[in-house]
Amino acid sequence: VIGVSTNDTELETAAEFFELFKIPWERAVPGKRYRVVLSTDGPTVNLNTDLLLAYGSEDRIPDAESVAAVEHTSGPVDVTWGDWTFPIYGRVRLFGTGASVLACGGRPVDVRRCAGSRVTHRVGYDLFHEIRHLLTEGQPPSRAAVPTLELHIGLLRHLLLESRVPFAEIPPRPDGYDFTCCLTHDVDFFGIRRHKFDRTLAGFVARASVGTLADLVRGRRPLGDALRNWVALLSLPRVFLGVGPDLWQPFDDYARVEEPRRSTFFLAPFKGRPGVAPDGTVNPSRAVRYAASDIAKEASAASSAGTEIALHGIDAWRDEQAGRDEIGQIKGLNGRKRTGVRMHWLYFAADSPQKLEAAGFDYDSTWGYNETVGYRAGTSQVFRLTGSEGLMELPLSIMDTALLFAGRMRLTEDRALALCKAIVTNARQLGGTLVINWHDRSLAPERLWGRCYRDLLKEIGDGNRVWFATAGEAVDWFRWRRSIRFTIEPDSDRVRVDAPPGPAVVPPASIRVHRPEGGAEIRFDGREPVTV
Ligand SMILES: [Zn+2]
Image (cartoon, rainbow, N blue to C red; front, side):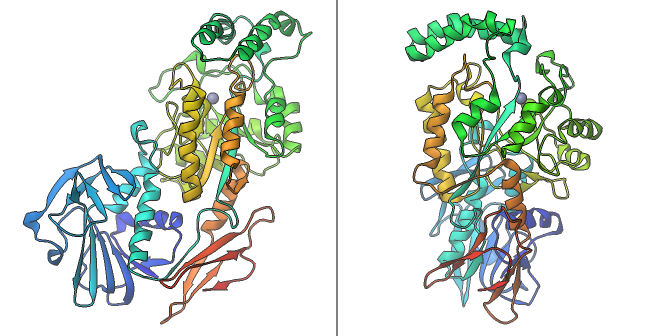
C-alpha cells in the first residue's frame, strides 16, 4: 500500500487520481511503516518510509536540495520525460543538478537523494493541483494532443517500478482488450426533408454544387464523390415530393458501416429550441428541425437492434428542470434504465455536473473539443466530474466536424487519419476509451465522410484488441472498476482484491501485479476475492 500525505483540500482530487491509477493507497498515518509515501503537502518528519516521493514546487524538504540552486517557472510549460513531452499548468521547480527523469528547458525538474536507508525523490510540481486543473478547467486546444493526466500516472508508475516496489494495479481496460471504443453519433438533422428552404438546405445546395466542383478541381475530392453529390442534388425535387428516399437516414447508414459493432445515438429532445448559450445569447441556428418523439419509431427499432439512444441536450447543461424535461423526451426510446447525455455544440459550465446529476442523468459525454481532437481532461478514462457525487464523464476523443469541416481544421482525409492514428496508438499503450463522434449526416452527400470513417474504423481494429461498447456500457464498466476494493493484510505484502460481480454483459478486469522479479496479470471478474 502506498501512503499518501496530502492536505484536506487535495484529498478529493487524490481519491479521484487513485480511481484512475487504480492501486492500493491510504492516507499516510504518521509513524506507520510504509514502503512508499507520496507526499504533496504537510510535514514529512513523522513519515516512516524507505521511499519518499515528494511532489511540490515549493521549498519543503531542506535536505533534498540547496535552496540557492533552485529556480521557479510558471506554467503552462512543457516538461520532457523520455519520448514524451507534457504540459505543467502551475508552478514548476527547477533544480540545480541531479540525475533527472524530468526536464524543462534543459534543467532537471526532479532530483533523487539517498540519506541513510531512505531515498527521497523530489518532483518539482504540484501533482494534485495539476490533476485538479485537468479535471475541472481541462486543457486548451493547443495541448489537446497530449494525454497529460495519463502521463502523470505513467511517471508515478515509473518511479515505483524504478524503486523496485511491488504493487497491484487494475489497468483501465477489460481483460484481454487493449482499450474500449465507443462509436457515437450526434443527431443534429435526421433527414434533409425537414429542411425545405432553410439555411441547412441552402448550404447543402451550395456545397453539393459549386463547392464540390471547387473541391474536385483542387484535388480534395475524387470524381466518384463529386458525381455522387451531383446525383444527390438532382434527386432533391423527388426527395421533397416524397417519391425519392431521403438522403440522410442515419440509423440505416451507420448500421451498414458498423455491423456488427453497436453504437450510441444522441437525439435532440425538442424541435425548434435553440437554447441559451454560455454567454447568455440565443442563436436561432442552434435549434434542430426534429424532436425525438418525431423519430420514435426509427429510434425504437434501432434500440431493439442493440443501439443505445441517449440525449443530445439543449439546456440541460445550465438548468436542472430543463434536464428533466429533456430526459423525459428520450425515456422509452432506449433499452437502458437511465439516459446519458452529450450537449449540442458541447455547451458546458462549471456547475453543469451538479445540474446534470440532479436531473438524473446516467453519464455525460460532452468533454471534448469543437475545434480539435484529443484529450480535454488529459485522459480518455471515464472519470467522476468534479462537483458531482458520482456523475461519470465519458470524454470525447475524435469528432468528424473538428477534423474535416470547412470552418474547423479542414484537413485532408490523410492528415485527419494521421492525427487519429496518434490517438489510437496512445489508446493501445494507455488503455481507456476511444470515443468517436461522427455526425448523423456525415456518411451521406454532400459530406461523404464515409470513406474516412471506414478507414478510421480499420485503423482502430488493425492489430488491436478492441472492446466496442455503447457509451453506457463503457461507463458501466468503468463504474464497476471503481467499485473494486483493495484490502491490505496487516504486516504483509499481500492484498485482497474484491468487488461486487460485474453486470453479466460486462467483460472482466485484470489485476496486474508489479514485482521486481517480473510481473503477472490475473483475470478478475469480482465473483471471488483474489489475494495477490
Ligand atoms: Zn449537435
